[in-house]
Image (cartoon, rainbow, N blue to C red):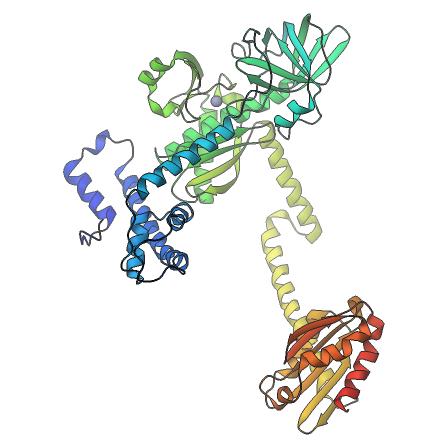
Length: 567
Ligand SMILES: [Zn+2]
């Protein structure tokens, strides 16, 4: 639009002017600098997309005649989905490229909207799935894990127990932390086991009835009914439950850390940071955040420092149960970072004022319970979404220990102190590179020596040098020798090299554009002699190669080549 209005100013200049003259920036969550940065990036990326778009449109319209006025809908759909080019942009680029009469057909935009809506619907349907278990008539399970997150034992009543069928198993996905295969589902009237949800994996532990110990391998829920996946059946009778609390503590460390890192990222990067997804296992947690650029190591460290300050300051983590409408009114839309609320009554978790979110997971009561956290990795999930891998509490300490072990092993191998590792490694690498170069130059020297001399391998005949030779080495070395032999146009050469290695390989080549190439056809020579190694091959008249299954036939093949050439 800026182009059609012939406005020379950049988008950020326009934005700055608008903010200066028309807006009261105090009422904005995002800072002026933040907005300008985003506008600059957006404009730059728009131009980048246009540049790439030119090539994409050119390719897509290859088959469309220049005078055409319509094009196949499919082309427009594809350019929109794969390249982010809307139909108007395509038409404008196409017109610059010479398709002057093209236009978007009437009704196309509506069709595209309908198609997009259908795809979104199909995707969400796939995700939602259907219920796997029949739990009609069962009371919703009483969830005791919210009241006291440190509780590890409970008494309950088994109200249902059924075996897992193959059909059920084929429809359930268990996380990689579920180490053996469950055989039964146990439903109790109440539980301390947290069922997988909100990115937090399900709890593990045991359910005990007298002498029978049934391991709980995973916990999930369906329609408010908690399903314990066990390795043994239980009676419909009272039961004692015991949670693997060490694992749960780790899950809570990770879960609470994800909230804290999210809050710290918003403080450091700006209010546009939004949680795009999260996952909390016992080994590590990951948090996907929206941000317009890739994160530098320095930015990650600032976020990590800020998050650790929040831990040290020992903020209270408050948990409120609120009606949805009430929560909306009190905290606004920002609390739904984990996705739209699924229930009318929601739990709101607040960590100071760094992070306030609707969340059904289990969290510590105070930030200092975690001890320490580290962001050990960042990667890009898609444009504008950065994935942070987080370890907290015990996994954070374990991660440091592992890093130290790697460092000390590596420095032992090189016989240096670990602080000297980078210097030592770069010295070794430089030496290795220079030795590699030396080896290559020695190799080509050997090739030169072997191929330059007279001897029986090399014969001059009517202005052409013929080299017919059995060599040792692989295809790559043979190719190096060959290019040495045939590269000098002032020395017309026909070379035939053979090796017994790998079932026998033969290469035939001549100096391009020389009388050697005029006189001989490499493919014909190869075909005439490759029978000796029970093989075949092909190529062009100046360069042919082949392989076989009988390496021992190489001497005879080369002998026949000499006969054929009259040497
Ligand atoms: Zn949470």
